[in-house]
Image (tube, rainbow, N blue to C red; front, side, top):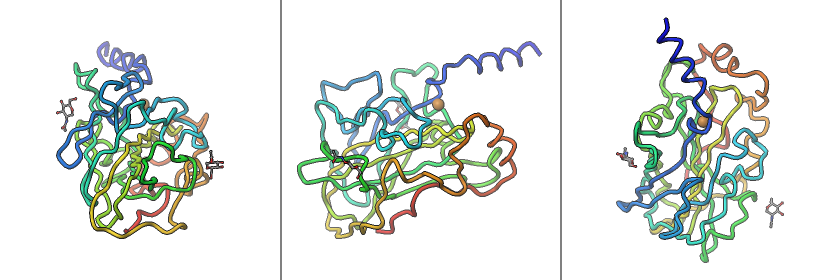
Length: 258
Ligand SMILES: *[C@@H]1O[C@H](CO)[C@@H](O)[C@H](O)[C@H]1NC(C)=O
Ligand SMILES: *[C@@H]1O[C@H](CO)[C@@H](O)[C@H](O)[C@H]1NC(C)=O
Ligand SMILES: [Cu+2]
């Protein structure tokens, strides 16, 4: 019994931040681009990623919901070239925590990806809270129940890359790609978006219509199937109330068909 108790005690003292995670390394059309981290300012080579921290991860109405605080581009920022229709690979394994390897720390909840068009001059000055975002991909509960089933997010937690297919017919241009994990097992949601800059090439001609665009914050408020008012209720909501549920409705708009 002693060992069981030690495990429980160890789990209890793991700092919360250690169980989070973010995009560390991107492979885009065969080229690797270093992601960044709250504590790793990639000043030398710059980054396609925007600065993110874990501030306010529980707040669905936070002004930094789009790209996470601060959401600013790095001092040296660039756009990764990619063909419309390519798959963006995101590696969540933190190169600074390799023993043991540390990837995204949560395995229950939806993963989503959104894009937003930027002016030809680049994405650095885009107003992130404006209605500019369209959903391009999502993955949630693949099989089984909420508590014992297979969530796509668990694969990333266990070391797989997150693979995001971009729309085949998307018009060329500069775009922000916002990829997001939402951890739901603690009752109070934890929202982990990261944003990167892309330069999409190709002959596509599709762009979303105005009414297919959403804003952050704004998109998840009052969403049926996911109550955002979990404060104080703890993980009972997940582990007791929903334990036998076999369907999870992913929040946000429909995936844009392109
Ligand atoms: C992710 O990156 C780490 C290095 O930081 C590497 O060890 C690991 O093999 C990569 N994972 C995948 C699935 O490519
Ligand atoms: C950004 O967009 C939001 C929402 O449309 C708007 O309220 C705000 O004024 C805009 N900010 C700037 C600096 O234009
Ligand atoms: Cu966490």
